[in-house]
Image 1 (cartoon, rainbow, N blue to C red):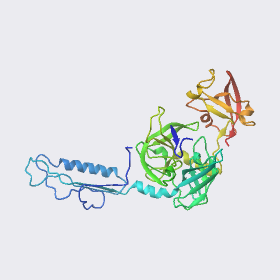
Image 2 (image 1 turned 30 degrees about the horizontal axis):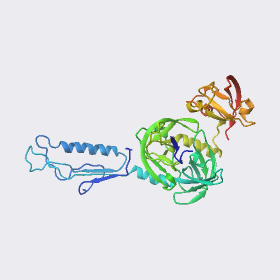
Image 3 (image 1 turned 135 degrees about the vertical axis):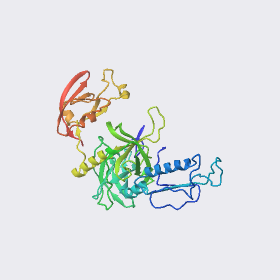
Image 4 (image 1 turned 90 degrees about the vertical axis):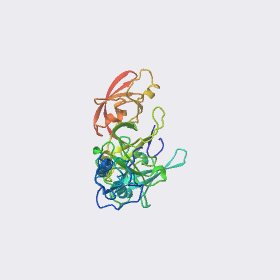
Length: 412
C-alpha cells in the first residue's frame, strides 16, 4: 500500500554529522588531513611487525579520501612493538584513539535549507459539516513568496496558512497545480526575505548518493531532518491514475506531513520532493524504508511555468471521467469487455467528449496512435498533446468499434 507522504491513504544507510570515537585520551591534531602515530616508532624488526600499523595507515588514508571536500584530521595510535619485548614475542596492545573530525556537509546543507522549508496548514469542510485540518510541507521557491508543494496537500481545501521556520504565520492562496498529471502545486504568500532553495540537477543523481529530507512529519515535529541514500532511480509508479517513470526512491525517513518538503543533496540543493511512502506490499507484508520523491528537475519546470502564467500548468482534457481497466475492475465488468482500456464513467454536457458523441459505458482503447493499456493509462496518452489540438479516439460500445475526433479542452 502506498500512502501520500502528507497523510494517511486518501537503514542501514545513515550519514552522520561527524564521528568522535575514543578508547583513550585524545591527542593533539595537526592542521589539515594527517596521520600520525603517538610516540616514537622503533624501526621495523625482523618479521616486519609494522604490518598492523601500515594497515591502519592505509585505512586512515582511505578515510581521508572518503571525506574529500571536507576538512578532516585523523589521529591513530595502534598496537605497536614494545622496544623491550624480545624478538618473536607477541605484540603488546596499547589503548588506541581513532578520531575523525569533519566539517559536515550535512549540517551545513541543513543550516542553509531549513529556513526555506515551511509548514502548510489547511482546513476543509467535510460533507457532514465537520472541519478537517491537515498539515504538509512546502519549499520557498522565490523571493516573491511562491511556495512549491504537493498538490494533494492544498487541493480541495477551504483555507491555507503558511508557517515560516521562525514561527511567522501568513495566509496562502493556491496559484496553480498540475494534478493529476504531477503532484505539484504552487501557493503564494506575501513576499518574504527568506532565501529561496536552489534546485540541483536530479538527472545527475547516482545510486547510493547521500540525501537529506526536511519536512514536518506527523504535524508536530517541524523541521525534522532525516538522512538516507538514493535507493533507486527512474522507478515506475502510478500515482492518481498517471504512470510516472522517473520517480526517486530513498530510504531517508519520510512520514505523514513530509509531503511537499525538500529532498536535498549535500550541496543543499533540491533534487526531489517527497510525495509517497510504501507501507505494505501487495502480499500484505509490512514495508520499511521505501519512500518516493518527484524528481527536482520536473518539479522546478512545472513550478516555473505556473509562476510565469499565474495559473495551473496547461494540460489537455477529453472532458470526461473515466476508470482505467485493471485486473481487479475487469472482474466486475461484462464478459465482452476488452482486457485493457479506460471505461468512461461520465460525460459532462457541452464538453469535448459530449460534442464527439462519447457516452458513459464506452471503453476507450486508442488515443491518437497510442493504445490505452495498463502500462500506458488514458491520461498518459494525453501527455504529448496540447489543449486545442484535435485527436482521434477509438472506443468500444457494446462490442462495436467507433472512431471519433475530439478537440481537446484545457484541463480545469
